[in-house]
Image 1 (cartoon, rainbow, N blue to C red):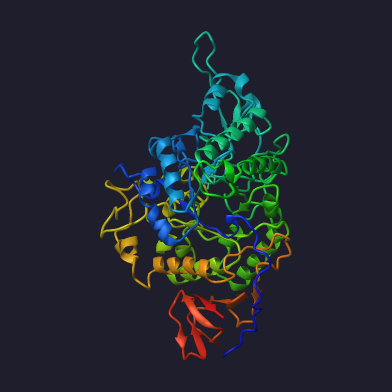
Image 2 (image 1 turned 135 degrees about the horizontal axis):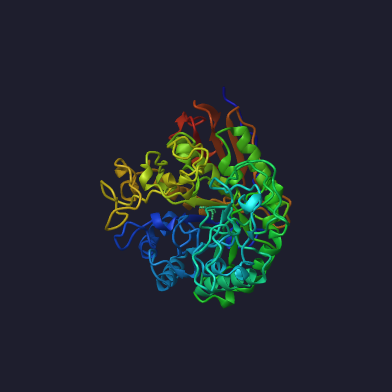
Length: 571
Ligand code: NOJ
């Protein structure tokens, strides 16, 4: 059946809000898996620098680098031992400065990770705390419960499985006696190697202000704030009364997350970021320094609190990432996300994949759907995050041998631990499958990743997925992303965020009537059709097709929208 799409308004969006980040496309580089310069099989800063032209050509606005700081790598660098040092695995501080400069020269901004919820257990503060009980106030140490204090202080579970508490030895006395077991317990919402900091302690706050300044002075354009919803714990650390497994990204309401107290920290960081005016930039690129929250909050409205005008600039939209291949659910999540962020005058963000979840090619079950979802995401108002390799259509690697897996949750008894491929979303210890190093060129591993091997084995059948193999092939996923990002800059209305007045209309987006299973929306000068059905759908042509995730059929007047596809139309 042919069904008409209703007319689209063609007025231009109201005043375009300022701020480069409002509609930026930001590319996540998982540092150890992007490009290796020295042949040790682990990606590094020089490797990234050598591959910046790929990112410039792709057409992204900024790069987010996952942690490259000094770390024992118990959780892929999210266990930081020294926030001001580069781990030798990844290079030197000079390499970091060179990378930032080279990126700026290519017009790319650089966002780095900051990990404030916890340090590494090798951090100087924690080492001091282990030796000296009077130096423990920067963390959460408590006596145990039960006879002999043998039970953890409360019933919290770690996100990586098992109790969120680990017991330490009684420190060696000045007499040099052997350490005695049976001391206090410390809190770690993640791995035991990641003790949680106590953000009530003034020194913790001062230290992170200083760390942020350190990287801002080096020239970075902003921070991705790890566990931005977790730094403040409920007073008294009460039991939560059930044994629910906490998750990184998931529908959950846990009292140790999303405490109101975190907002004061974000406000103070916003003041700090704002104090770095363009005039003070050492590297010449004009623009604001931003903060993006990796936060989980129970509702879109609670999440919007993190992006109020005096808090962080953006928050990842994990509800969009979590959405099943269901047009109604997708439309609902899009509407709720836009409404919630518009209510505080912030842009919405969109994301499909990252280093913590199963790649969306695999999650959605096919490359066709992954390509369609990418075009949908890039047509929506606001800012979009891409995860390295999604521009190549990389699937999740589901058959990694146990012995190469590094995800700390893999050995901690999470629900799907050890059962390869059994995880629905990869969070239960199987996050290595989305972290397999990038294939750049050549016919066999390591596919140009570096002069040595690669820290996780790459599949033998990735030769056709390399950047080299896909470049110039008009049907490739890489060329689809390149074309989409180019059009995003060229087509009027695309990418612009909601207006700062927060009335939700400034993005110019309107849903159009469409057949069941098809989502269609218009923005000024533009229509996007998204067919979630497994069969083609015939429609009157809404305009001139400018990009489609699958080849269109039809006779010109009507058009046959392919199964599982997304098409952009100029009108
Ligand atoms: C979120 C990060 O994305 C994840 O990789 C890490 O394991 C946790 N935070 C803990 O830092």
